[in-house]
Image (cartoon, rainbow, N blue to C red; front, side, top):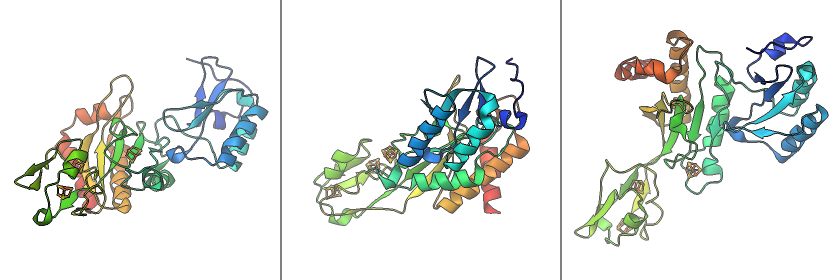
Length: 291
Ligand code: SF4
Ligand code: SF4
Ligand code: SF4
């Protein structure tokens, strides 16, 4: 166990975004950057601040944030003050809600279904840093391509969109079937047939129809729970699908409340969910959301 350095502000040193290095006289400072978004000016300033405090390299983490390695803990007060002023404050890395990750979604990606960046910012505002018995990672992918590996997080959110077709007008040209990577569409007797069991609700077949015969249902948000990467990777299980950002926030609120009240320290959330009847957990959360 590393010994804490002396003559430093212990309140700051014990905060979640400060990580002790293998050299116990130094620490790593991790930032809060929801969805990994940062302006060019902020990024430049992070570099300049780091330089002023003797940090010669920055590290980009898997959780879409920046960390400053090899910081002298006696400098924390000044360093954190400057980072806060820059809008890139101290992050979290302990038993708490840590940096929310997200792909660019509808803001920039042509496959985007939901505004994942906006949702990440809302989730960050409400839940970031909340202290819990276990660490909670939340990730969002705007479509089922899952670029954020959201199902490998304790809470994952995926944007989905059901295709709605009008078979009566279909010419059977097969363009939509060509675009479907899941082979969920077949042309039978001149019209398309959708296999709902194969369909991932990615919406990729909507745009290509030359006759605009496939429309997209309103976007939805699929929420998974109990995923994890690291030593024992695990895919999160489907909890519920909801129709709005407000519903997502309500469901997360109930999951966090459940974790706060029911989870225990010392093991990961996925392991704790394994010990429960998942269907019972699911019913509990859905009942709480319905209250
Ligand atoms: S998950 Fe979908 S929307 Fe997000 S970056 Fe990947 S392809 Fe684009
Ligand atoms: S929504 Fe995606 S998976 Fe479903 S039929 Fe269309 S292209 Fe295929
Ligand atoms: S692309 Fe349109 S017209 Fe062609 S098979 Fe699909 S739904 Fe029918």
